[in-house]
Amino acid sequence: MPSLISHLKKVAEQKPQATYYNVDMLKYQVSTNGLQSAPLNLAVSWRCEPTSTDLRIDYKYNGEAMSTPMALNNVQFLIPIDGGVSKLQAVLPPAVWNAEQQRILWKIPDISKKSENGGVGSLLARFQLTEGPSKPAPLAVQFTSEGSNLSGCDIELAGPGYRFSLVKKRFAAGKYLADN
Image: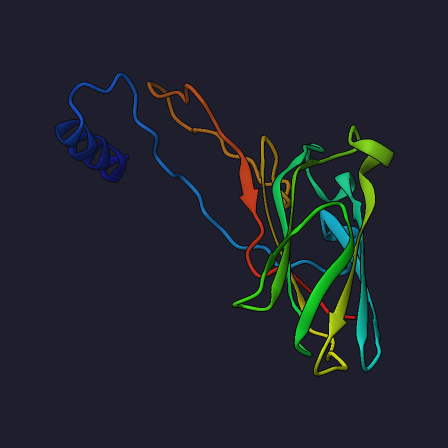
C-alpha cells in the first residue's frame, strides 16, 4: 500500500484537476496452448502460380478462450505478398493494398458470436504477378478486447479501508501469427 499511495500522490501532483486516476495494478503475458486457448482461430491457404497468387484466410471467433466472451475489436490482418504484384482483383471483403511495402491489410471493426455467421469468415484476394510465383508468408493479426481476459485471473483488495471503484479487464494480441 505505501507504494500505491506514493504513486497516487505523484499522479495527483501531475494532474491536480483529475477526479480519478487510473493505475495499472497487474500486467502479464499469456502464451496459448493450441486452438482451444486462442480467441481467434486462423487458417491460411495459398495457391501460387507463375502469373497469379490466390490467398484465402479463414477465421473463427473462439469465445471459450476468454473468461467472459467479449468481442475482438479493431481486428487487422496483414500479410506481405511478393512476386511483383501488378494487379489486385477479387478482394473480399475490401482491403488496402500497399504497393510500396507489397502487403495487404484487412480491417474488421469487431468479431464476436454476434457478428455475421457467428464470428466465422473468410478473406479472399487474387494477385496478378509479373515476377511470380509468390512465396507464402506468415499472416500477422492484431486486435484488442475489453471486459475480459484470457487467463481467468481476477483481483481483489485484502484489507480494510480501501476499495476499487472500477476494475478494467482487457487484452491485446501481441505476437499473433499464422503460418500456412
